Length: 518
Image 1 (cartoon, rainbow, N blue to C red):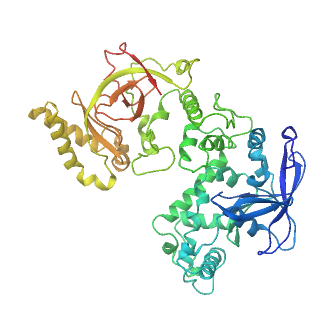
Image 2: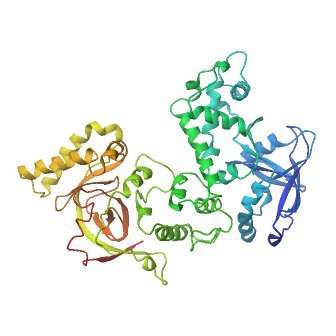
């Protein structure tokens, strides 16, 4: 690659020679400074898999590219005009760590200063529509025409083809967030087909309002089956939210949770891509450099956690923790936004001192988190996870849990059992919280939760991973109790009638223990 000077804010651009679809893609590099005035376009795509037969010729050399990049370059290339394009895989020297870090700092400028960004969703594949390649392309064209202009008659198989667009991998990648909000203009590419981004935004707005122009002659619910409309509108809403972060200071924890399940090749991208959305010069995480890819991912995440605890002045970052699930949403994970909505309703730590944020880590080892609090009880027995579809079976599960607890020595006289049944029903009905929130509790807070009894007879609900022997702690800075694998790993937040407002601390606030979280 020809050299560039990071100090001069220089980048490489690709000059793509004109050609037809059956000809080789031939390019050469052009070095420019972002401080100057040069017109160019950018590309946003999912890297995908590589095929040994897919190459582009840059400066006379064959360079292997992924299938998606090859398809995008083929779609973008003009048959008659030179195209000037910035694309990461061909314009950044991936083996030069200093150059990569320099480009990270320039990423917002690269995309915001372009004239247009192509968003490449992938090829039109026959497997997506169950038709031949030729038929699939016609169906895809019909789908995009149905979005753009009212057809004279219904495009009978457009619906099935269209469903690929909002489910394309592009929507699930972490780096497509800044690439989707920084450029002044976008063009959507699907194989050889193209559409103005604004047209697709209009479709999203229609989807959010559940309306579809009558003159299209198409069935709205055929285009958007099984929640596809809400998925599409949620994707656009998330981009709009991310765009606002460049103008204001958002809540950092909410930022990371909002896009936690976006995919990335490198797990560190989940931090660095989000930090790149903030206003220039803003440094909300003091211990995290903007793009240090020499730092191990585990160390980076630990530093982010400590900084978030500092920012929150408490342990809100630990609610809904599931250490075994870091990348994709799964059935065994609870909903952060539901738990977050109730977190401030409780004061389990009332009576404990303030969290000492300066003592969270030590200079000798910043990979260990130092916390302190009261160890209140241990889990005696725990049920299997409760799924929302199983709510009718919860009472039967409750009876089985009581029988198991009795077998392990839980006190079970008639008066105690009656009291426990009342407490359990109050938990089920959401009476741990305010009357106007009880409906939300019943709908959202039982998903993927586990019922448990403690050794002293308390009833609780907690993460699906709570198991016999886990400890229940009231910790400094935590408004709710937390379950811990004995003094080493936080399992997640738990809810136990009788200790949610400081009752466990009364008379015991001086009996604190230090714990180390690894």
